[in-house]
Length: 120
Image (cartoon, rainbow, N blue to C red; front, side):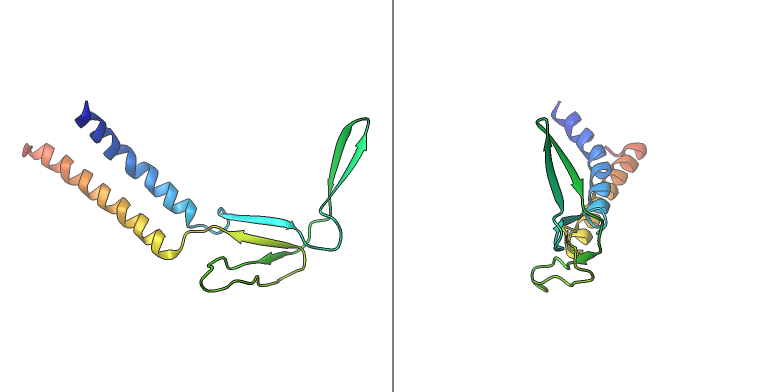
């Protein structure tokens, strides 16, 4: 049972590592917009018969932020409306993730070749 679980894990692990590293390294996937910073409120709540109606203000330009806390602490302002927080993985983490993916794939290929050659 233990060996079977390890074989299953070695097959599933690369299929999970690659999409995880790929998506975490994309800035557009890992970015979150903050609240509206313009003078108009972002949302307005109106109460009618106990129901809350919410309306958004007109979409405005975004404030881009470089979120590496070591390099920059203040946002770079493009417009005056929204901040964008990026949770994108740093480059070293992305490289490490792809390296781990390659190691697992190479190890699996080696085991399959050894199994085919009958050297088990």
